[in-house]
Image (cartoon, rainbow, N blue to C red; front, side, top):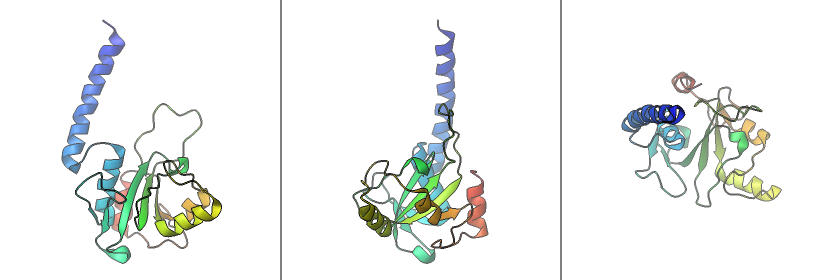
Length: 175
């Protein structure tokens, strides 16, 4: 028997057990996107749509300055690699991002949160159209666009709102 395959099978069983516990906790799968939606719902008081395949948006803000607005939650290893922009409408994109990818570190990226961005979808789509940016999967986004939309860890000068201490602390658990 191949010891490497036996070891891999054992590790996958361990990972599956952890993924099962995460799914039980979140009520969704343990995929990065579903964990991100669960996290965002808790931190930003978002009422998630009952289905994880809701077209265009994942839920609605329940409180705060964006109350009632729809939001599409995106979770990436690094938002700098591009974001998925849907043809279905939403009011905002809330992007949870890990740190930028480092050269030569392609084997494993630990689940971590380095930045959170809130992008006004109408403004973003208008800017993309003006610049001739093709919209879809892995839409290229400028670092300046991300910096202007940053809520966490340090908010942009014109952030749509500021995180309170509780929200900042909750996000810090995943940094």
